[in-house]
Image 1 (cartoon, rainbow, N blue to C red):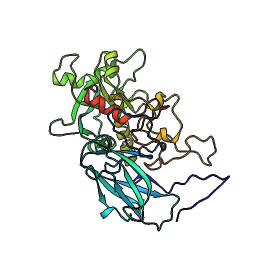
Image 2: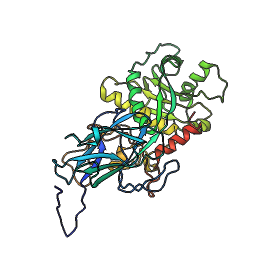
Image 3: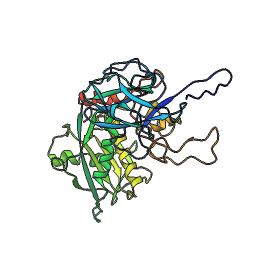
Image 4: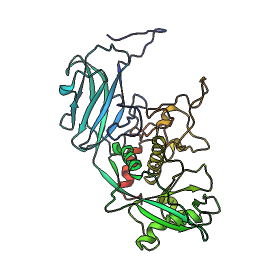
Length: 388
């Protein structure tokens, strides 16, 4: 029933493991899991602990999600059951009675009470009281809501009228919302109370914002001030929304996104905000790229840094790092073929289709990882009002 392949008198047995339910683009019901290593790492403020050895997952309170059990060293015919050590906090929705699991390995759970830890989800062999083959540590979060205001910015000059950028804003923001949902953070676009804003501004080049550099942030700063000026707020007053400015292009065509969080905005004496460009956003892949860019820049708003504090000039190359939302490059080329031991990246699909970047926001806190516990860090920033 369990396969042993002993080599050099050693064998690590992994009967089952947990995974995201489905590969592909961001889906709110299919959260990513933090399966980086078997240990949970150091304790994290705000998260109670269990003795589970395995992955961790975040859940929005009262929202049902899909997860998957993958069989590794166990026969496909072995009946597997899902149980929870604290059923008053986590409800096993499917399969009924906990099992047996269907051939897909997919099960559904719901956190009914917001709590730092919800006990352990366990995979058991044969029945709901059988031996435990694997464990998952879920954490259920109450909802923090962050409003976002999209701006479609038409850039004119003294002699020419620009073109208003046009992208599927609601489709993009549904995916942004899905990425942050497992952290208990709801990026809320409400067209009634905060509709999309059509802004006009005069700059030096039609349809173009000059890239910021060490000497010239002037055009970026002028766009960032549009919301405050529109609302009639005095300088130094913060609009309590994430302002997302959609432009046609930057002067450097390789720049597709930019985020200025509150700390940087204070240094520059300007307003915070996010930029993305609209060029080429005409298919599902590009919609996902923009969504991840916006979600990534929101991460910076919420005090998160690039993975291991390494940036585009020296990004991490490990597969786990490339799965993380805070990887510093938003879209990367596919892996060359044939691959070698030094190929970068080593794989193309990290759980979100044939790409090399995912949407993981970490829960674990490994001692040698400089930018871990992203979920609780982001929630702390929201709670303390440090994001606007």
